Image 1 (spheres, rainbow, N blue to C red):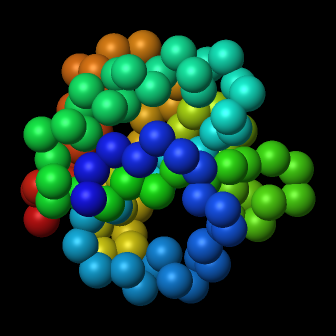
Image 2: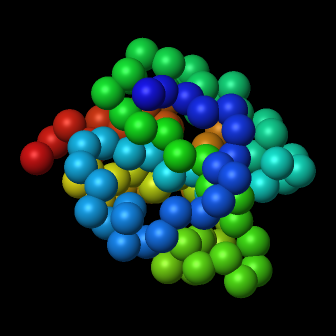
Image 3: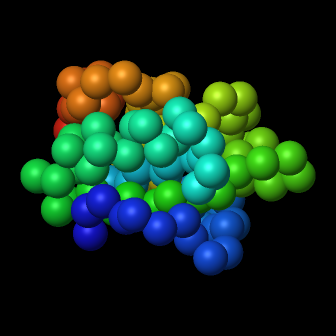
Length: 109
């Protein structure tokens, strides 16, 4: 699975994320956020060649437990996970290269 254009209809539980095997990118934001909308092309470009990475787009906001558990403050925030553990994050990316650098951290054991 690579880039996902749609936000999940239901936020996953943190316990499910923590036990998810493999490589995952959690994208926190909203469908109406101008920063989120502006970053979509960059995110898609960075994830396009990476079929090995699961991309989960999570709508965030006040009272949303998953975003609070990751201490999300600004949108979009991309959290890179290897076997459920955070290895890198990018906040408000402005270049595909910044995302690709964080994705490279997924490969290092």
